[in-house]
Each structure stands twice: as C-alpha cells, then as structure tokens.
Amino acid sequence: MPLKTTSKTYRAVDYKALEEFITAHYGRPYSVIRGLGAHNGALHAVEVSTTYEHHDPDAEEGSRISSREGLDPEVAEVLDRWRAGALDYDPYVGKLLHNLACSGHLKPGEYLINVAW
Image 1 (cartoon, rainbow, N blue to C red):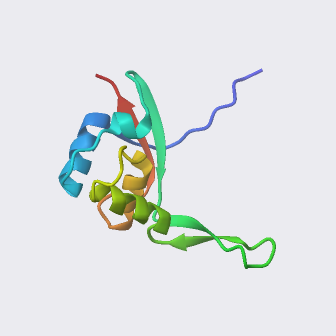
Image 2: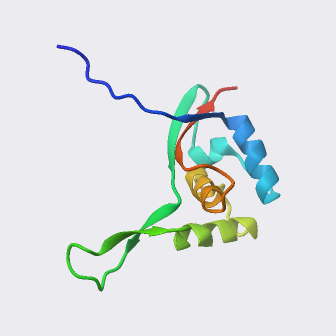
C-alpha cells in the first residue's frame, strides 16, 4: 500500500529573521519562540490570511459563520493591548502575521517557521 501524501507550497522563514521583522515593524521586542511555544528543532506551519471567520449568533441557522475581509477585531484588540504593554505574554505569531498581511506587509499563504538555534 503506497503512502498517501499531499504537496504544498510554503513560504519558509527562519524564526530569528521573523523576530527581527516583527520587532522592527512594531517597534517592540517579540519572541517567536514564546509566541509559538516552540522548542529547538521545530517547524511550525502558520496559515496567514487577509480574512477572518465572523460569527453572528442572530443569523439564520447554517449562515452564522461567514468569512470577512480585513483584520479580525479580536486580533486587533489583542495586538493593541500587546503594543501598549498590557499583556504579560507574546501573542501567537499567527495574529501578528494576520495583521501584517492585512496591512500589506506580508503576502497571505502558509508560512513554515524554522525554529533552530
């Protein structure tokens, strides 16, 4: 029996280069390792999009979840708190990448983050 596989295209990036990019863009230090909960020798795939899923509890059954263009308001709130120094943790890297894609600083797609030191 042959092994079933799927081919994918990723945007490969080293965690240190990503940290430098995020730190330069936001003007504050950021740790990809803490944001991912990563360890040495890990690869992390992160889907980066310029859309988000919106949940409308008042909509008809079957249409309560829809895709919307732009930055997820919940992500915007977390990033605003992080920028203000009101978080005691580094937010998940996907949230920052989502914001960077929505603002035109990154291309949407799947990013493969190489964590190795």
